[in-house]
Length: 496
Image (cartoon, rainbow, N blue to C red; front, top):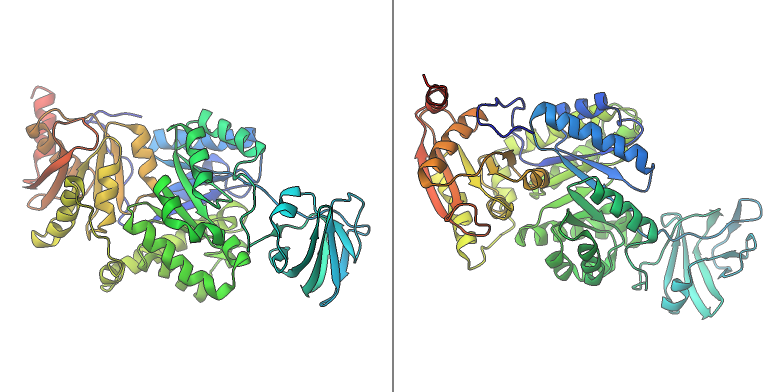
């Protein structure tokens, strides 16, 4: 990707601050569709390792990188690991009917089951269960309550009956299971993703901080780590888990299975609030525009749901099957883009976003970021220019949710790509600066080139001295643009 300042910007920065993460799949995996999704509003792309093979995912990654080079815009790729999948065994006739109040047995016998029993091939579950523990089958459609546990079988009462069929998924919401978050398949998929230089790894089935620490050790700094909060056990230890992660996702699908539906909204708000206070990007995901899998327009309830995430100040909102396998992937991204834009234009948006307090830590870096956010309105600045090597300064400034765009200048393509999930950030890879004067000049030119500001407007600059030293943000500077800085630079560099 070019880094020369004379290279014109071919991608107009978003005016929308909330980011859109679109999942790729059979409906959206061609280079033409990926480009169309980006033009419709997608800021980042998710590859779901629960589906497809490495060859297919490699082609999608190549298409994204080719588009990135064409548009000269760092583009974010997130690989979502599958995690352990707990399932019951098979049945004699493919399915069976179980009735409320009856006793049903889960055992270690691989013989096909019937309306009295079925195989449960996960020995770890036998070790963790206690009488009274719930077993949820088929996304919670069937509910069993454990009555007795023996080494090779579990007897349970049927609380909610119905049809149970081959290999249906099983959830155990009431206990921490002695299962690692990474399976052998996940480890292979992780190695593939790191070999492809993807930007984010999403970790599923997180129950405890140790799961995150293990994934971080395996990633070894080659990608950023996002944890999916989809189990009650993770919510209970949220702060500890987020301390070890780079970002998190409110994975409402499994959360909605493992807890009562009415519990999900307050937990969503808690996760978003906690992540924002800790300065970690947070993605709200699952069923956001679910009806658009088959319909060209969403329900009003879905629109309100997406809007709520934007009002809460989430960094990103995600499309799953809507863009991966639905009939209307471009329309889904377009409508999500329109919702975000409309909500952010609401005069009450700024106040609602700041309903969550994000107090600064007692550090110079945080003091500079907080001051930049406050000064925007005092001096009527058009934007903030942030110089960063690692992205930490940009995350601190974004945590303040300023009212103006954030132009992030970094010499690191890896950093620029990772910032695609950060609220309000437009990341540009460019040569680092070596002096205060060079910093000011580059800020003016980049602000003009990328449409951040025009002649007569002010911008605020944050940077660190000495330049090129990560974690040393200690400069806050206000400048006014004349408007001809870019033209003068071109004349001077061309010898005119």
